[in-house]
Length: 289
Image (cartoon, rainbow, N blue to C red; front, side, top):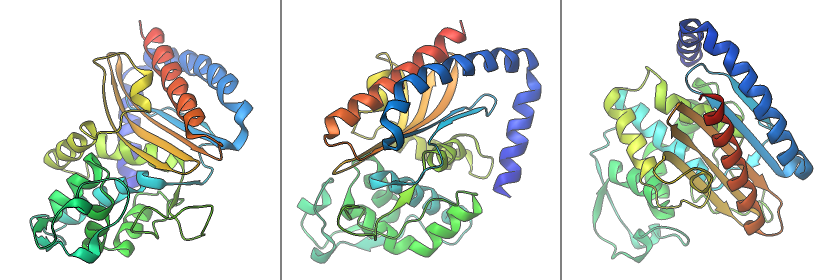
């Protein structure tokens, strides 16, 4: 069903303006050349996927290579939660009691809170995205279910994403039990959240609001001018740095996923992500003027 919906959306967009499609091809050629020069020297340490949400055209470099997901894996948690809610299988208003044993290290605020309070699943999902709260994430995943999350991803055709770690903290250097995904899968997922007719308007608005107000803005945000809005989710582990989101550019919206793995310093990976974001935005906007 999801593949059919995507295909219909993209077909309508492509037929709506054939002159734009021709113009877009020239834009993509220029973008490909610039990104090849920037990314290829790093080999498989960097992967990216760009999707023009006006017509569905894609550009990938190592886009289907598998990377450690880090906290980007929290996006499938949110999407599955809202999907199950719209299917009548989950009540986002259901309250979950917060216990001392739920606390996890890393990002978020719940680890500092007193146990005993109850939080709705919806609020846990909000904390999962806005603050990348690891404790809230695990609590939400246990209500939603890892099996449901992975089944949902397969229904969406996102076959190279596997969520096995509900803490989102497992280090790829220390264990094989960590979450994996691809730039292609995550770019497709945020495109679904933005454009798919499968989600209600209210659900899409809520999910995108969480992404727009997430607090970590070291990645895609650094590559666009001030005032440009982005709805995104970052991921950060040792030698793993990822960012995926929707950029609301003046000329239109696009999805961009940039993943890195294996840089000795995350500072270097961050600069690469910033530069890729800048190149994509600059070429996208200049080509549309």
